[in-house]
Length: 181
Image (cartoon, rainbow, N blue to C red; front, side, top):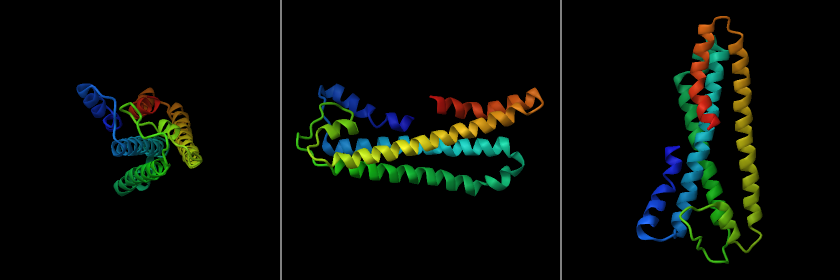
């Protein structure tokens, strides 16, 4: 969260100090890349964390074999690598579209939709395809998280002791708060 907000706030502060609303083309590309990278990596990490909570609560006796430290490192690395790959592909696709209405946005935050408005070719259909793939990825992660928590809640409600239920819920509460935000 701190990283994704840090992609836009510094430029906003600089523009306020210099009383301008401009951003360079390269700055725009960097901002889009970092924003997409940090947001997608965070979403993939939240999905991995939901799997971790699922294993910890629904299969506690198998946790050590299913979620060793190497496995956790591999899943975290896969989440970061997937976020990086997604951001590279999306940014490269977005900035390969020819702009014929100039390249001035007149604001400090680069939005893909505004860049598409500056395009004069049918190349924006590629970007629409990337957006559809993005929605499918996000929806897949969301469904996985929801299904994981449905299984977790089902398992927690079957715990006979109130102390056990409280411990299980307190284990999931920080992750649930982040996902819901």
